[in-house]
Length: 160
Image (cartoon, rainbow, N blue to C red; front, side):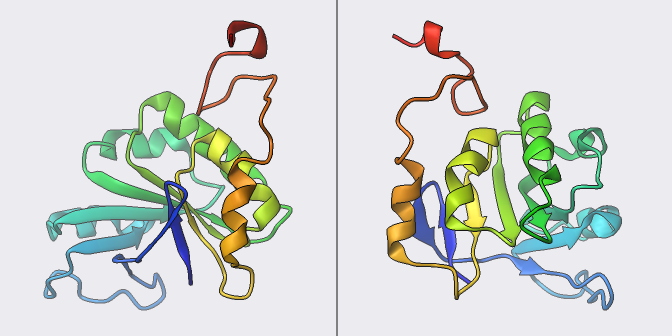
């Protein structure tokens, strides 16, 4: 699964714990541990070098705010193309002050990349069959933006 971070391809170093079969991550030396929200406290108790959480659009952004200082990654799932809750959740997390890696995972397409970035995402896990190196041009195709967003809060009349 190709990974884009800050508009460049990168290697995924995170280990995702399956919620149906939680591993005993306390006994292993996982440096980059990614867990579902329900396992966040036990994972934090294991004290991995880097801790991340994977959530879906049903999770409230406020539930994560106390964890911001401990989280290196928040991954938001997009189960299907038409599910836009992740856009709102990303924007809320950035407004609450989260500055770490915000990754979109799931059913992500080329035409969504620029919009996801405007909402605050800086990383994207793409399906193998959807990824092509030309996808990187999706970030620069729209050069004029009228409204403010997470990447630039100024509306167009403030941009000179």
